[in-house]
View 1 (cartoon, one colour):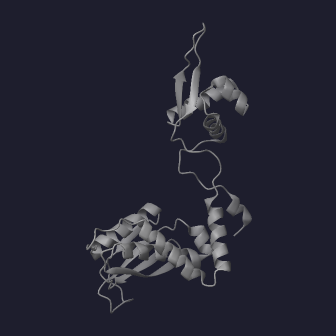
View 2 (view 1 turned 90 degrees about the vertical axis):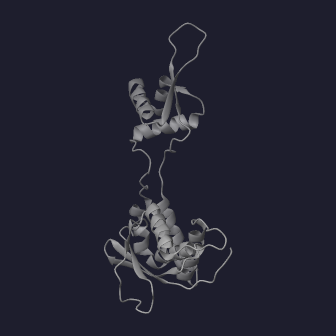
View 3 (view 1 turned 30 degrees about the horizontal axis):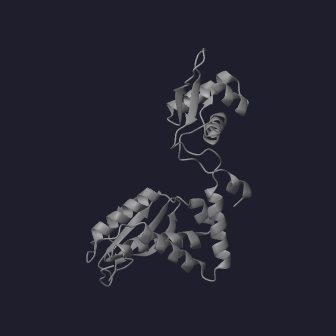
Length: 242
């Protein structure tokens, strides 16, 4: 993987902003107090009309608020702008680079990186799942439904495949979850042993937390260019009151 790919900023989940508008938003966020058009224009080195255009655009996008200046002296009150409390922080994001650093370090430094990654994923699978009430266990269908919903939230574009397979002929449950998208694809292509182990551990942690009679037996990565497959089987778990 080439260095320029790793240092490219990650796409933002927030509204799309050009460089100038993002700089205007960042100026409002760092100011702490409402700013006038003239103040913003001087700070970002834009013509006041251009600064006003971007400020009004931020207001329309719900990222800034406009208020009229309260003044006790004669003269036309100015419009003052401030960033909204929930406006996304501007600036570059490089989470992919962080993921690459951590995955490569784990692969190089851990004596059993795949097992360590699986345990980490399993711990997070437990954490991300709502624990059932004491003495209650989810049935297979309910547990699989919750697992698919979580995978969808993460970005795997999952699809439950109910067609029986011959991969586990001795298992009562024999289903698959088709993962049509990998939200960590670039890192998985470079360090699949670590990333895919995290994913498998995550799914096992979810099903274990639910005390469900189903388990993720394995994960087959990239069986097609845009498809990974999770194999589900029945599992005999000891009862627990948590």
